[in-house]
Image 1 (cartoon, rainbow, N blue to C red):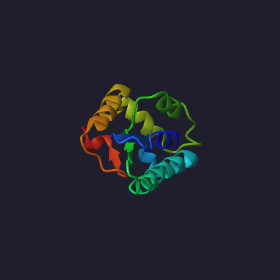
Image 2 (cartoon, helix red, strand yellow; image 1 turned 120 degrees about the vertical axis):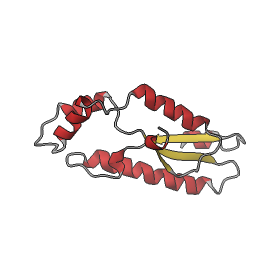
Image 3 (cartoon, rainbow, N blue to C red; image 1 turned 180 degrees about the vertical axis):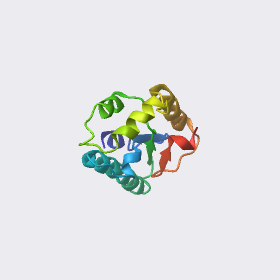
Length: 131
C-alpha cells in the first residue's frame, strides 16, 4: 500500500511481485493458515490489479509461484511429525530425489520477470512458465 501511495504520480513502469505458492491452489492438512494466506494473496493481487487499472499511472502486480524450493521451510517440513502432516514422506522424497529448486534459480527467474517488457497485471505466474 505504501509503495502504491508513494508512487501514485510517477509515470514510470511500477511493478509488485507477490510470492505465492502451489499451496494457494492445493490444500494440505496441517497447513490451513499457510494455504489460506497464499490463496488470499493471489486474490489480493487480482483486486489490486483491478483497482490500479483505473489509475492514470497504474502499478502492475502479479503473484509468482516459485515452485518447491530448497529452503529452511522445507527443512522444517521434513522435521515435522507425520501425524501433523500426512504429506511428510512426499516432501522428504522431494529432497532425496533432488527436485527442489535452488533459491538462486528462483531469484534469477524473479529478476527475469521484473525485466520483462510486458506483464499482465493481476495474473499468477509460475516458475514453470519460465523454465
